[in-house]
Image (cartoon, rainbow, N blue to C red):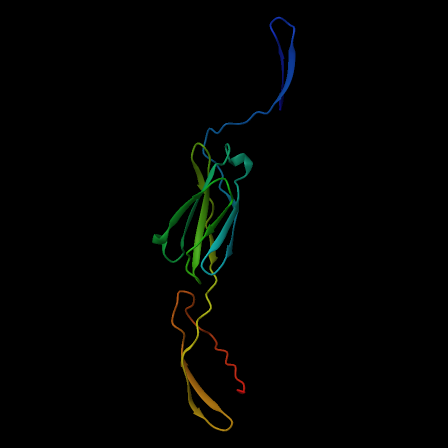
Length: 170
């Protein structure tokens, strides 16, 4: 902060004023956003990050540029831009898949460097009901049943266990 004193030319009036010096950007941000984090859900995720260090912002950050893609398919890259907020909600993702994302800060001059890529995996969907459940044999003390697995969906690839519950009917 600087203090400025002013006096009129006829010497009759004076003032004191505190001023704050604001550095205007002369370059794009020199640092990338920090601490990329995710909260994954089944078909969506919330991405969060911290702004670049203040000394690396080179002015006021006005937007962020976010790139994300399926980790297994670089051609799936998508780009989103948000204002000066440090969070983005992604929807319409595939459940049970691994994604990567990165973020760059933008000031009035342009884009800074991208952060180191972060990865997250969306939560796999719960499979649907089994199909074609049938009793194939029975005796006084046992029953044999068979079924077909649920219809495939984009939420799971392998069912590792089936849970069978039984009881007497009224």
